[in-house]
Length: 179
Length: 366
Image (tube, rainbow over all chains, first blue to last red; front, side, top):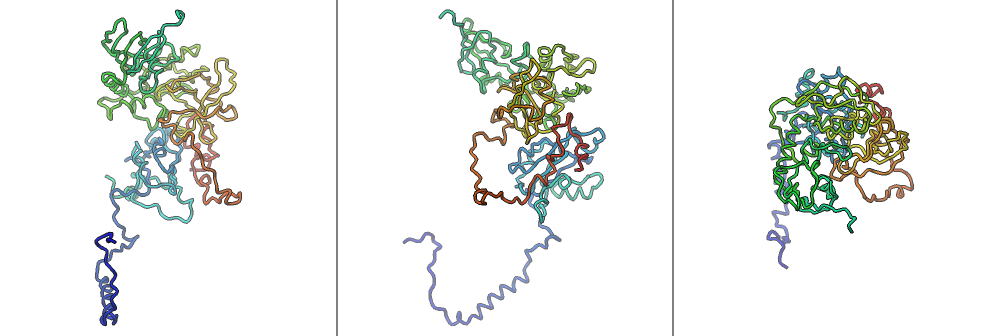
């Protein structure tokens, strides 16, 4: 039968030579490889003290964005929820009261906004659908949690810190990719 | 058979159809259906005198009639032009028509705000459909869009004058359905606006129909305002015995879960109301107990409202109960006990006005 590939080799079944039967040279060879690694550069990263750089297209945990004046951008238009293939997003809208003008950018806003991170597949279609630049996928992972309850993210978890009152936290949450 | 009425033969986009004399080109095209029917923003079959204003239904008449086969020199408004025997009409097969329609849509959108994310009409807006088909990606208009002083039209109807395209449908509706019209188009030209002359609320028994008639989001239901997006609701046909002599109580209920979020009249495939309904049916009867359910509303499958509604699917039988000996599987998490959205104690559909932050705070949730 013709061999399927040119790389096929027949097994060498010759008895071992004296040199091979001594084993010690083979052990020395193995040890030299093992100890040689001590002097090489470590590929391990000491997470969480050090982190690897994210790919520019990485899609992590969602953030709900604010504008320069710290007003929430989301108007609860529902396009992210309708675009979501995993049906992870739900929301409830409310009308802005006159005294809330500096809290919300538009007349209508999301009073409740929830993403079920157990359902989310981090596809980024919500980010693509958003007409108001309100939802972004950031450079962070969804942290582990002991209960399933902890993966239902509401507005408290998702909303980015206010750039006016908390500029440092805002910059941190915005990450390196913004602009 | 001499008694038989003579029918006119019209050819629209190479499809020939026989219609009764006195039919408009638009109605003849709608008889054929599909893409052949020109879009209409101001024309409304049920309203006498409507049409001829928006110019979206322009068509080319390639041959006037068998007796006089000369083409008409200009594009004609199909809602206002009656068919002649042997007329040849070009709608989507004519380059001129498509070009003109693109121009009309651009003109309609000059002053129309881009607030679809906020607008309650989004998802069932005729202007949205029209601009999706014919619109440009951006505007060439360099000036500020027109703005208006806000008018309050009472507890039922919300007016957004900036969104209005001045189709006059609501004016005809008020004229023809109610005894006394209190709103109309004031001023002229760029300043013309829908308003009541002196601040007055619209409270006639049938005035709610102007919400259904409005092709854009200029007139919307105040009791439904900002409550939900139409594509998250499930439309269901229902009826009740309405005491009002002119109302037959045939409506569409828009459900989310067990809550009726809004009541509208039933609409046909052209987005036109089948039967006018009274204000009591529309605004006051928002409980399933008030209605007799007739079945789910047929929605065009290309509409965003039909997203997630699967018709004619066969669901496999749940085998888990048999395997577990009749016991229900243990849920690791019941989403309704965790989620803050759709809390049973916050009943948004029962509110007569849009929800405010206070409605959510009052119930102890932030």
